[in-house]
Length: 339
Ligand code: PHE
Image 1 (cartoon, rainbow, N blue to C red):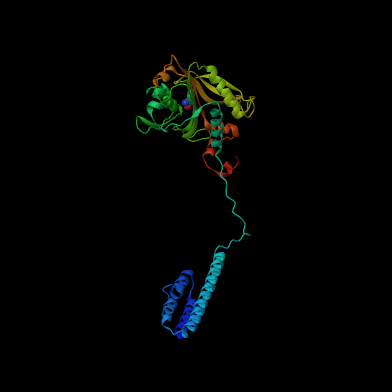
Image 2 (cartoon, rainbow, N blue to C red):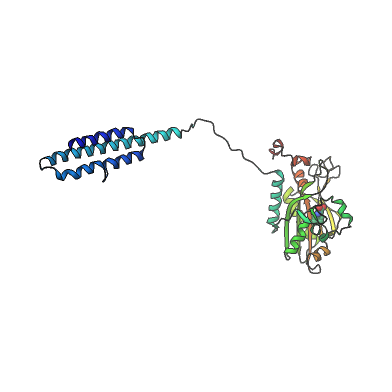
């Protein structure tokens, strides 16, 4: 029995040598020291020994057990140390390497101006809404008092998809959607893309952006329009901003006006930017035509309204002194990084 115990100890130590991870170590521990292990099996036979032999063998068995236990504990510590060393090597970080600075993007100048304009109008109690870019003829023209044979259609070279469906040529189409969907009082601002079949040059693009404004309530007059425009443009361009209204014609407003602003560049003296005029054309405006109100189910005897539409490109170019529209679309970083 003594020999059997010594054999177990030798076998355990030999196997320990080959062990390389903690799962194998646990298997080994169970095999030799566990309740069903080899050592326990031997101990169970001790009852058969004589009274003299029993304590001697018992002592040997105990020392074999504690030797194996000590060896297992030592091996466990070694495995742990090795693992943490491996981890340190794997996760090595050279803190002396130069860092990678994240590249911060920023908003396009037209977005900057659009957000600024939205903020101004939100501050005056307007809602910002959007409308479809692919539109029915009805919303883009007919409901706005532009019947199929109306000459005003010729001024907006439209991309037709079918006879009845087109890419909207103006954000005024949103006026109709809003008046169909809401009851007065209505105060909305609607920015978005519009499309016209124009050749690209320094002041034209087949895709550009407009911002539409519509107010409908009881007792709205031209004075409200002028006051709103003044407040808006002074906030956008500063307290010196001065506007003038010129009579104009839009089928969906009556009376209609074109609104000019004193030239940002020369302050009204006349320069190349305003072509000697002292003013630059900024937007189209007017009192919502009674027929348009009626088309949208709003009683023109009870309600009146004003609307205006401005070109976002033109406002952005004026604000930053940009002289070619194409720069806004080319996405040349040398240009964009200046804003
Ligand atoms: N939709 C007109 C245009 O594109 C501008 C406008 C809007 C005029 C609202 C009057 C009222 O030219």
